[in-house]
Length: 144
Image (cartoon, rainbow, N blue to C red; front, side, top):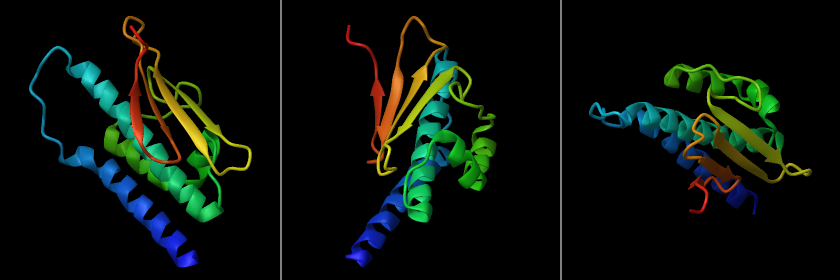
């Protein structure tokens, strides 16, 4: 059973790392007016991927998921590398990325988390990015 758990955690880390590396191989988009919005959203999705990956490392090392402040300390090398790659400086909660508010809730026993990154800069078209310990990332928008 322990071998299965180690294999499962290793597979999850590999999948999340591949997702974090994907933007490096993306094609350069043509110049269009929506490009700044796309770049903001791309950075936000990248942050959610980075948090998911850091949480996997946190759980495999410490046995539980962690809140934002703890991730920044325990997974500082990974988070610093991500910041350099994307070219932004992460801040304290709630607005960890300029124009994006983070809500990272870790369950009391540390065995699950919910993560929502809300676009607070775009009042006309509100949206958010959501993920949890499963590692799937969803784009959310209000019902029309």
